[in-house]
Length: 382
Image 1 (spheres, helix red, strand yellow):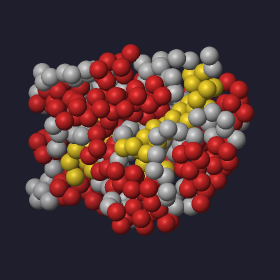
Image 2 (cartoon, one colour):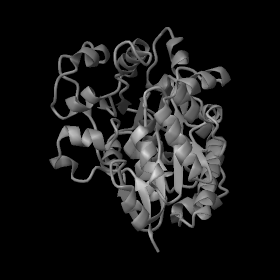
Image 3 (spheres, one colour):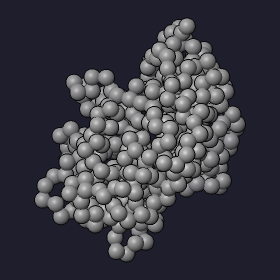
Image 4 (cartoon, one colour):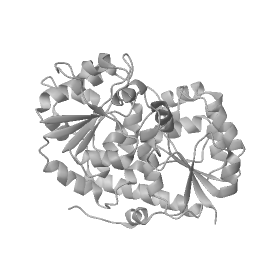
């Protein structure tokens, strides 16, 4: 039987240590968080897999694979123009499985969806429609993305979430996580840095909150993890300085802050073992901690994080709610104010597993043992 093809990596950049920064940065698509859902996709399929990039030959996929899995990010937006990917799919003779496609906009709602659909490039529209023609259903990150797709005339879609939420083998993850939150007295925390470009992504609000968390939490140690942007990832490898923005967060410190980045998910997970909790605006950093049952709270700050965290019932708190606190927000305030229901989370996660098992069955793809167990489980609180 032919193999299952996957666009992306198995959750690591092979040989990343000996490769240039530019090579590694390109391999992760400009954001190391992409490795998290690629790692998940690899772990959820129990058969031989071959990994490809969008620059590989479709003919090679046609000859060696019976189906191509495409794990996605927030790729429906004004920031993409996938003419080359559209042409890639036109040469593809095998069906595709599309997981976790999201839309990127400033706000969510019917009017915003229609407006965004009008602004999306012809190349990206064509890419979406070519995937639609080659799949039973496109699995989306949430209802807003569904509205965008339907405004573009693509109806064979279904809200799903992100496969990264299925990494953990723990069927009762919601309750195990919540028990850990209740007993946690964090002394060492990870800050999933949202050091965005100045003037973008609620920049001042985000960095002011991050600085406030560091000052108010009174913890022993703060470890910072970067997923993007390019200059911050380059800084992690001893590249050019980005003190202008780092100093906005770490003002008052007399040393250069140590910021870590990862090109291998198992190394990232191992790093998290040295900490009690994590916080921040980076959704995949938060999801990875959650999959380790480590206390974490996502600070939801835009349409992307709100859509995905709400659908999957992730532990979250809105940035706007944090900003209302006049006395400042430390780690304890974040956890006491977060929105999370372990039963709702567990049920939603089981529904995701069931959706994915049904889709795999449609294409005769073997699900991993742990995915099947999550789909079949009917666990109770602990």
